Amino acid sequence: MVWSKRALFSLMSCWISVVAVAATEVLTFDNESFRERYAKLTYELRCPKCQNQNVADSLAPISEDIRHKTYEMLHQGYSDQEIIDFMVARYTEFVIYKPQLSIVTIWLWIIPAVLLLFGLLLLWRFTHSQPAVEDITLTEEEEQRLKTLLEDKTE
Amino acid sequence: MKFKPMLILPLVVVVALFSVFGYALMSGVNPKEVPSALTGSLLPEFKLADLDDTSEFLSREDITGKPMLVNIWATWCSSCKYEHPFLNSLAADGIRIIGVNYKDDRDLAAKWLSEYTDPYQINVFDPNGDLGFDLGVTGAPETFFVDSQGHVQYRYQGPITNDLWQNKLKAIFDGMV
Image (cartoon, rainbow over all chains, first blue to last red; front, side, top):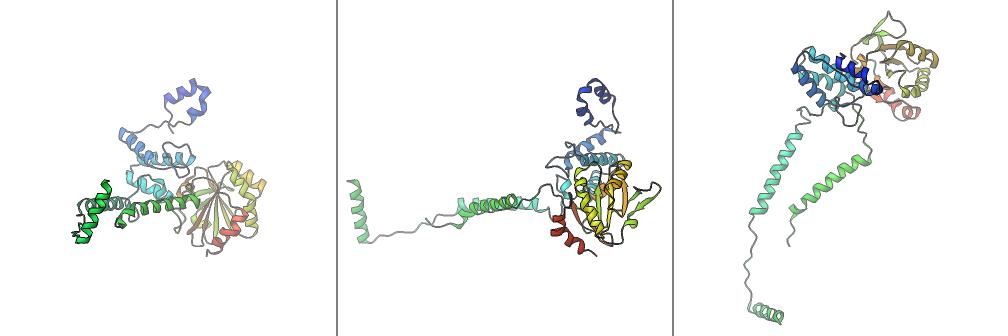
């Protein structure tokens, strides 16, 4: 861990908040793209010990290890995917927030699409089906009854 | 009005969702429980010092050969202290336990083992947590059930107790060859 002058300065000036400062890691990167990739990876990697926290946010020792390993592998020239695969090989799919495409996870993309199509189909059926209109012809008797009923109502 | 089966579809969907979430809630699914990536595969290769002897280096081949427990522990870990007497009794029953001293201080670890007796047949010293990382360890104590071929069959996170051993873990251990 490389401490910058700024961290050292804050450590000296605010000795009261030693704990808060000690919990801050200050890293230096060889170039800006490493910094961006590190930020993105630690944001997407999930702390295996915590309840729903990414490793960038977490103070758990294991998150510290994962951050450290990510930093190290970035500078050794590994690609983002290789780093993710490395973590998944040790901490399973649990360790990533963004699921990798596989036979198990493909349903995450397929099911919403299928449901949407199904919904559209339902919508189309409800709006376009013709209401069944029966041809009603009344007999003489019924006609008479209808008439009396209607007249009763008007009273 | 004529009955339209399609109209109760939303109800069916909602009931299905409620039962899935309700089941998860009631059955007490532990969100902290992470499956081990190693189950079924070989113990990772390592080269680490022996805790008792600084000049000695240990590797996977030095510890495998018989069914065993690989116990990750540290002196800073209070659950490990709680677990320790039970590990002693397991060792007394002839169960092979390999200790991996995880992110710890050598002197403190040696003191602990001499004070509380040493249940481990071999003590691996992993001060930086390298082997721990390759094992997918998230904390201590953790115990891996490894068969004679060196394949991990099961992983338990947390302290092993007598109850747990009798009710569940013993069968797993005895099932290993």
